[in-house]
Image (cartoon, rainbow, N blue to C red; front, side, top):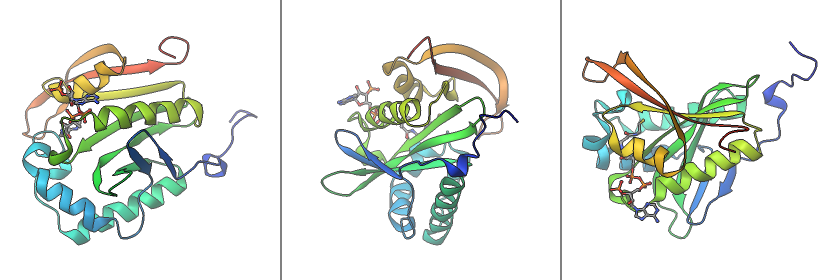
Length: 194
Ligand SMILES: CC(C)(COP(=O)(O)OP(=O)(O)OC[C@H]1O[C@@H](n2cnc3c(N)ncnc32)[C@H](O)[C@@H]1OP(=O)(O)O)[C@@H](O)C(=O)NCCC(=O)NCCS
């Protein structure tokens, strides 16, 4: 371990920040009910891409996921971030910084949006702000977005924000339907994209 290594649990990381239209924050106790409502509404759009969305979860299961998300955020092992509309307080979707490598300062952004809030640029806005948070607050060196090569809407979010398309990894993992999928890798890297 290098002399400069700081255990990430010591890092002062805000739990909440804002973009133009959104509050972006760590999960809180009792968020489960609104998350569950959004999943219920969006299950048909989530199912093809999200392994956890093969069946509608119960509200209690969504509360467990939210609470675990909060605990992981506090531990700095994974940073789930919920998106709420600034003026209405409505739950819009979920994103976050995952597969964190604190030593390399590498993060992977994931996301899903509730169907009734899609097509209005909310996720692009959130991912842009989370990228900016990772760069400026977390001193990120590399921020990745990975998606199934067939997931055009997801790839468009990365492309719209100027992430570089680095690779198409063939037969990289099993898709949710059990077939092998190709994975697109997008990234922003310090010294290149920022
Ligand atoms: C991937 C996903 C989040 C994209 O959602 P989205 O609503 O298309 O993304 P945004 O909220 O950024 O909206 C962008 C769309 O709104 C339009 N738009 C309207 N106003 C906009 C604005 N102010 N800024 C940017 N885009 C705007 C864009 O043209 C774009 O539509 P297009 O792709 O048809 O051109 C969504 O499809 C989803 O949740 N899918 C299921 C889960 C999933 O696949 N997650 C990713 C796994 S890798």
